[in-house]
Structures are given as structure tokens and as C-alpha cells.
Length: 114
Image (cartoon, rainbow, N blue to C red; front, side):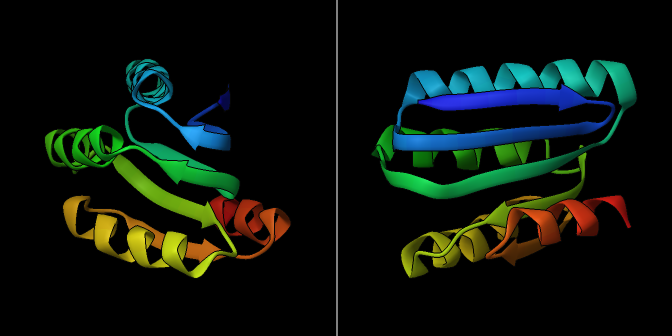
């Protein structure tokens, strides 16, 4: 399940449980809407409650990231599980954005606003 909100050029998404392809498509639509409004977007991804993601999500993330590599300013990922942190660092190879991992959502918010 995914919860998404858009405020200005910042898109916030929190994943709860399994991150499915349907969730990722919803996330993509939010990004595309944000791009139409403000050009480049900032992302705050809260993955602390994500239990797993499907292989098709991983593939879609790579494809979408490569297609929109220059459309992001900053990407803040809130995570505590080591495997999520590692996958974040791998994903940053596909986007041209400042990417940072945080354990706390308040720190992530402050970094996005800086």
C-alpha cells in the first residue's frame, strides 16, 4: 500500500507492507503530475514500513528512473532496514539528483527544504 501527497514541487510517499506494481504506477502518476506543475520535483520516500517489493517494481523503478533521470532535484529516503538503504544507493545510479538516506522523516524534510 502507498500513501502519496503533493505539496508544491515535493511529492511525499509512504509505503506500508508490500510495494506492488500498482502502487508504483500510482507513484509514477503523482510524479508526472508534479512535473507538469513545477518542473523538477523533490521526493520524500518513507520506506520504514515497507516489508518487501516485487521484482516488477524494481524493474519499473529502473525504467522510470532512466526515462526521467533529469526530472528530480532531491530525493530523500527515510529507511532503517539495511537492504532498503543499499537498494537506494543502487537506484541513485539511474537518476541525476541529490539523494540522501535518513532515519528520521523530520531530518529528511529539512534537507529537502534546504
